[in-house]
Length: 141
Image (cartoon, rainbow, N blue to C red; front, side, top):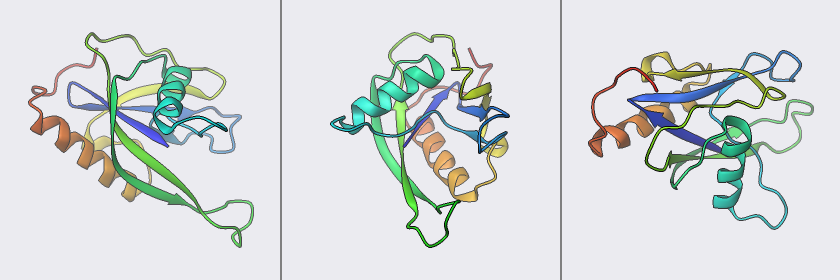
């Protein structure tokens, strides 16, 4: 699952470390659900662990299927994506250096991902922000 977090019209993206099997890949913060954990709890925990940010609310906006890399005969896994809102006040991003080595605030036309289906979800997320009257894009905090 992933949290699509927007500040000043830009989406938070994290880059996987060189030692990771997805080295260099840009993605929104997120991860898996632990046994007995509710989705909302898992999303909040993962965002805190990976980016050092809190989220106040989340709205489901879509999913992506990821094929099994190690065996194409295995079923795909499904990643759920949420439009996540931070509580009032902007906090600095503090990435977990064991998983990611960089972060960036990207505009829709410069989303750092090779997946067109993820870009489509990002565009949907940015449209939600624009409709809510969050203001014009500016320099990220």
